[in-house]
Image (cartoon, rainbow, N blue to C red; front, side, top):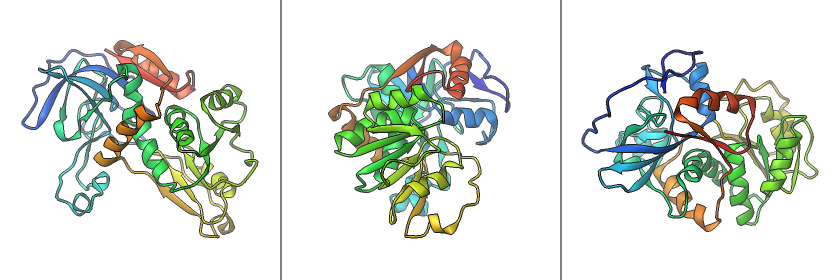
Length: 315
C-alpha cells in the first residue's frame, strides 16, 4: 500500500520482493500497526521526502531465511557519528531515516530493515498484539520516562499509546486520570476499563492537580489546558510528532517552574527496556484487525475514532 501524493488514498500495487543490502534483513511482514503519524504523512503535515513510499512503522516481521521474529520501529537508521549519536541521543540524529517515511515500511507483504534497528519480540505475544508495542508503546514509554517519578498522571487523548501506558503506570504504582474529547463517553468508559482512576472531558479540570501530563492527541489547544491542570514544578509532555499550533496563553500558567517538553522518536535503549518490561506488567493491547487491502479504511477509522485501542494490518 503505497503513498503517492498528499491527500490521496494509498495505492495497492505489485512490486518485486526487495533485496536486502549489507546490514539489512529481509522480512516477511506478519503484522503492521496503524499509527496517527501515518495520517500526518498522508495529510502532508509531516513531509514524505521522496514518494512513492510504502508507509507503516510498527512492523512485526519474520526474518528470511531463518524464521526468527523481530519488530521494526519508526527510527530505522542513524549515522552513528553525529554529535547526538555520540552523546547517546540517537533519536535526534541529524541524518536519521524513519521507517515508512524515508525507508519503505510495513504496509506490504515483504520489507527490508537495518538489522541494528530490529528488536526481538517477547515470547507470548501474538503478532497482532505485539505490533502496537513498536510505536504506541515505545514512544509512550519514552514520554512516561520524561515524567520522572510523578505519581498522579494526566493522559490527554486515550488511544493506542494511552491504553498501553495506563497499564505500565498502574504496574509502577502510579495513578492515571484520562481526558478525552468532550462528549466521548465511550472513550472515557474505555479509559476506566483499562485502569484509569478517573476520566472526563479535556475541557474540565481534574479533581486534584496533576504531577505530570502527557498529551497524546495532536491538538495544540491541550497544552494550555494541561498546564492549568499540573501543579507547580511539573511537566507537560507532548507525545506526538505533529501537533496543531499551540494558542497563546498567559505566562502565569507556565510560571512556577512548570515545563513543556516534546518527545522525539526513540532510542534503541528505549526499545530494549520497554520490550523487556511489557511481558512483566504484562501489557495487553486492544486491537482491531484489517487486511492489507483495507489499510485506507483502517486509516479512516483511526481518523474518526471508530475503534478502541490500536489498529493492525495483516498482509
